[in-house]
Amino acid sequence: MTLQESASLNTSGISLPTAGAQVLRNAPSSSLSDVDPSQLTITLAATQKKLPDPETLVFGEVMTDHMLYMDFAPERGWSPPEIKPYGPLSLDPACSCFQYCPSVFEGMKAYLGPDGVPRLFRPKLNMERMARSAERVALPAFDADALLTLIKRLVAIESRWIPRARGCSLYIRPTLIGTRPSLGVSASTHAALYVILSPTGPYIRDPNGKGLSLLAMSDQIRAWPGGTGGFKLGLNYAAGFPAQRVAAALGYQQLLWILGETIAEAGAMNVFAVFERPDGELDVVTPPLDGTILPGVTRDSVLALLSHRPPKAVLPLLPADVRIHTAERPLTMSELLAASAAGTLREVFCVGTAAVVIPAARIGWRRPRPGENTGTEMEVVDIVLPLAGGSGSLAQALWQRLVDIQEGRVEWEGWGVPCGASDA
Ligand SMILES: *Cc1c(COP(=O)(O)O)cnc(C)c1O
Image (cartoon, rainbow, N blue to C red; front, side):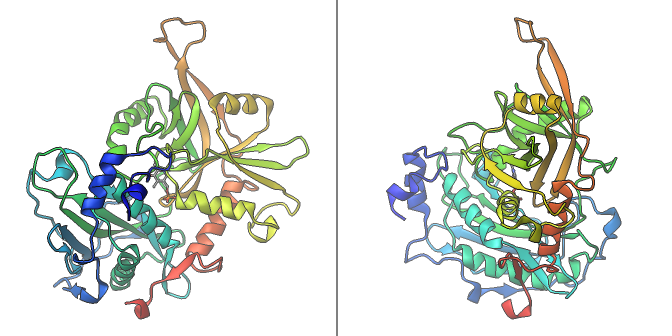
């Protein structure tokens, strides 16, 4: 990579010469070793953990028996990868990931279909996004194809952990952290890359089963132009936790992130709104990738499925004559409120690897009370979505079709990538 290329990584087109220079210094050159699957060593756990009951699975709490691990040192490049028993890391307390947060993660899943073959869903997109995230915080580059080969191997070894029930899967969490043992405020020269796995159920907990309640607050911001919202970085999340508590205290399950009154994302999911035209045709709108939005694999997949012609062949459960128009354009709270009042707002739904597609049932907008000058008096205006994932909803059709593709019941454009023993 040239300095020019690495200096313009950000999707919003903001140039970052200092970070770019650090990326250049850290990238493995020909004299350093890159990630090399042929050097993999495997040490199996002496005992296997008992598998959890899929009914009681809470997202991200149970880990499998093994993990993939490798690390980067500036004089040698990437270490030979290891698959070894899951366990704690030993890190110097001064490591940069604990201080300045060079920390990147990915979220993907392995699914088990009726044929018993574990499958990944469009995993190259996750690997490419992880490489972009690493560049954004000046962490060392790695061969994304080689990492995918190693992840397939790990999943094949851990396949007994993939729950068989429909909609259940094995969540995969690749993680890359800066491990430079120094308090100096600069790019990490050292890094660790590991992948851990956690069996997971079908949904984010949705107690009433009727869709999520979301709260939009203009005084808490997740991402801004020129910032890091378009990358999967650890530093994007902790600052949202207090706002999550406010939402929970007001009786909402997730945050709807807005900038001003422009809608960005919902929790750690991308968001779509469905409007009905006077002639019954549907406009399906999602905010554009302007640098504040995480470019979700599920978002991309939903847009591709909805844009396909003819749509009936793609989506089950929908009326034969439904006509859908997709758009990536800014979406505002006022627009939702007005469409809701006019009866043309049919659905809002959230999409991401964890939940796949989950409808919103209610959206609260916490905003200054009109006519209130100081802006300290707040009111919450509620938008209620009657369809909320019910029959005939796009949310339900998309969930079913995506899960069918992910679990290998439906073949679609090579999106399902098997990781059988032959890949090992
Ligand atoms: C991971 C994530 C998403 C969803 O991305 P997928 O690739 O579909 O899982 C959306 N928004 C944020 C902020 C995320 O972290």
